Length: 219
Length: 161
Image (cartoon, rainbow over all chains, first blue to last red; front, side, top):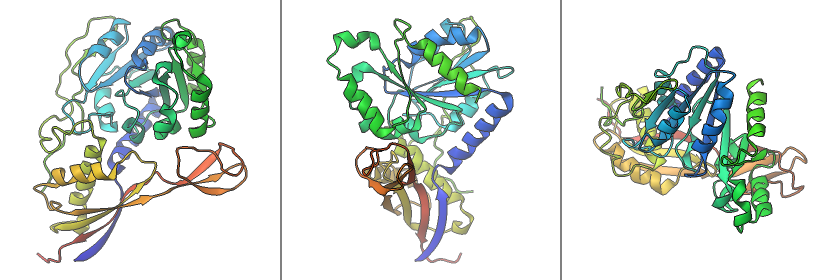
């Protein structure tokens, strides 16, 4: 047998397309926000609340990633924002979005003058963290109903994000959640991660989220 | 040119395209491949499938490996990557079927997660999912290793044809 050195990044092909996406976003002044969470944390509900506010000042579009259904895209379309649904149900890698899917979806979106592009990743705390999409910002959503230990069970995702939205805080009075322990677990995996406590139901914390987006978009 | 069965690596884009306030309209549905993928059908939801497909594509496209049957594939996988080696081996075999990589053995070297504390300079290995310096408890770290996901080398059958 002959040994041959290969030395290639396994995700090199994805990373290359991600770099193309990032270049396109940069050239067009688009801020692409990759929103990641487990299923049911409230990604779509949060987007429904903040999209109209952002759209009042600058054009916004959304790419929805789901294993199946167009339910989330229909909700986004209902708030008047252009949206493309990606369904991964025919894929081997159904559990996350990859850079090629974003590149393909961009062909269906009005990029002219676009300022904000939100990518709602497939609800999953594992592999979306592994795949660069070319995004500008990465935001994680964790709801208080998911318990205290998610950050230490899925450390990569909590290390990859630049902001954590702690959603559904309006439910705290009804839960036996140890909030201090949850926040300590966030700190243990990513000591510098800012956390915004929010509620898509009541609107709490959304000013802070929008302010964070606008601050980071300008950077 | 030889290729593995095509994995649908794009997604089924444009199944819904809506603009402005208008109702959702069907998109073209023509973007992104959906054909093939039989090897991974039934294993969807496992990201190792797209990673295995990526490895096999790299091998089949590599000019130095053209025409050679591949027997051993050596990989480095960092402790912090989301790849589960057993899952990767499982889908790798299925996706490699019918190509020059069929039957190849995967040898996976798991790379420990190592970090240096930016506050006190202490170098340490992260064994639990706790990214704090064990010496001074600071959380600003530089990761030195653990995110690897790379092809290192392969062994091929000797053949000159």
